[in-house]
Length: 98
Image 1 (tube, rainbow, N blue to C red):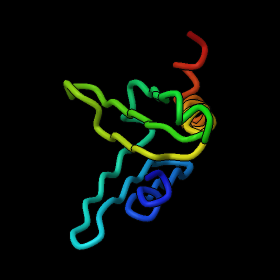
Image 2: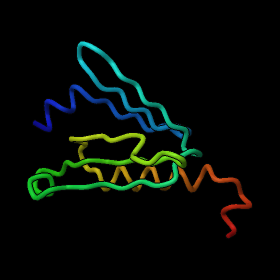
Image 3: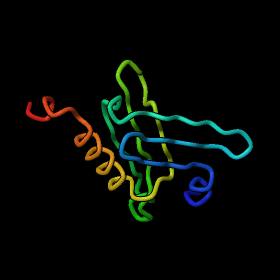
Image 4: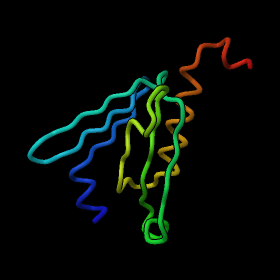
């Protein structure tokens, strides 16, 4: 299942954005600037822990539910840490001092 999902969903993390592309016959693209992300989290069930895959959730302000939900992502804990560290780097210097 996770292997099939990896071919249907694409996650791209750049120095300024998180991009989620999904679909085979029809495509849906969600593109969020790192400065717009308010919260990140991930979830893994027992099988996901064993096989090292899970779901990453990315929230933006003003949105009642996750803006991006990526299922079947390998090493979701490491991907979340990467996104969080990039968010810290892109914050303006006056916000980092708080």
